[in-house]
Length: 363
Image 1: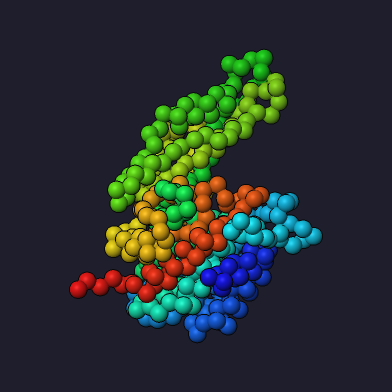
Image 2: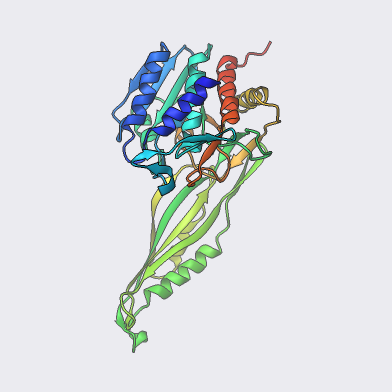
């Protein structure tokens, strides 16, 4: 799989935490040179999404993103990303999340001979809340099916690449408590916004965590207060206080945060809502699992992922999605980020195998 390894290294070497143009150039140029596909570079912010298509029929997309979070000091030398191989792993910012899997998807796209419309997508701005995929979906139809190449390796067994059939979303909210300012020597003459916010926090603590089942896998959400900000001076009864809430959402359910408005002077608003995902096609989820099983010696399973991905935005538009990729838990966004080269080979075989096998035809 030298093509996958070499391409992964090229992509990881290309900085893309501030401006994704250069990484997009690498992807676009490679696709134009190595495939006969129709290649589109759109006008999404930060350099544009890269979309390539070949074949006809129902569309199956191999989906990734080429932006990365800012590198740690150890991952940069004289303005260049530090990239190296050691003990069968590729090290560097974005190796796991997720340029390694993007490279595997690109080579699989090149090599596949599909009986469907095969689409390759690499989006910008995934780390900023799905900027690229949202830009694309506002202008184009969503694919019928998609494999989002985010991490699914070592979920059930070390070194085995599983298939995610559901993942949580994230809703970030702010609770606002309004009070009446007063001198702290006469607290009864005011209304303490921090006390009201504290009462609202108590409401949040009592909320039930929503949970659903997807293809036999339990997906359980959570709600947590993660910050509080109020008060202007030690001798002033505060008239405002804000509380931040992190909610991990599940398909079709949300915690009843509106209950905080039962506290006088309290309101709330949503700041960010990254959607959860559930696969809506058993046949597609099983076909990806079969392809993953054929690609490796271990026994992959359908699993649930705790993190939001671009699959949530696609699923919201009707795409039947799974997540299947090389990153292992604990690798993404770290100063020692790396990916197994053998696992990139498994991903390549999985993506190519699925593309050649779909749609599944019954005799």
